[in-house]
Length: 348
Image (tube, rainbow, N blue to C red; front, side):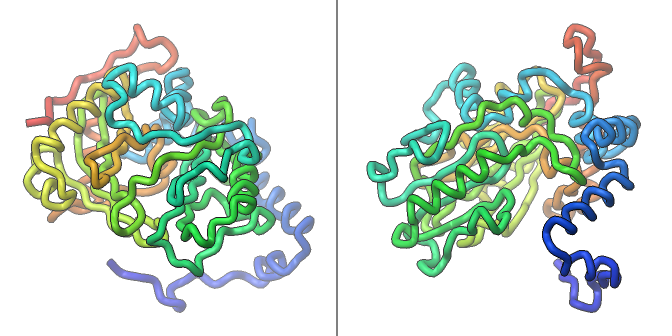
């Protein structure tokens, strides 16, 4: 993988440098004017632009943007809600593969921090990321970002000796105060809009690196198409992204450390969870005790990140695979009118 050198990075214009050095109120006004000029603000204008520019999708990301702009079925909100998704999983395949929840509340100030174990994971349910992993494998010098520094939707890994409940609560309550579904300059992720916001604490299930690696199964029209293996650094940053066709169980098993039988079980369970959906990614965690359900994803990468390749395949061939497997419905509003072409069965 190539990296960009300093010479390769685009240079800022004098105007951009001037704006960056300006006081915060001026920077905010400049940002609003910039987004307004690009039809990315206010929100109704941004939505109209999104609908228009996504009207004729041809590739995988284009279909994600099409879905983001038009699919308004309430089931998407259940998928996006990290807590409601657990209820959905329990109803369809049982709760054996759910990670135990230690506490949850509307405000992080109401969490019983003193009663938690030494290691745990804190999340908010209405966003992607927004996570704090407390484990003994973290760098003791690592610290949480401060809410006033605008940390964004970060994924953080800190040592128990550095875990100050007051700082954790402040960051989580900052996330709870923020909307995830739309910001000027970003595409609207409607499914997150109506989620009742909660903070919750899960049992820590990471391995010797402190964070459980992941298996992400892309399902199109209810049929699994590929297995993506995600590994993480000690700082809980995604480090590797390997993809395998569902027919490539042997190399997928070697990469993930799971047996082929376990992968087939995950594929069938993902098929059950994705039934009736034109697209859904089912995410699992690999723990010392076996796979555990992680979350359901409606819009991977918000339609702007291209998938990595697998084996000798290129990202372009994976993009073609996903685009060809995904048959968009004629309409999302009335399920009875869906007319989709069912792709071939991909699970061996």
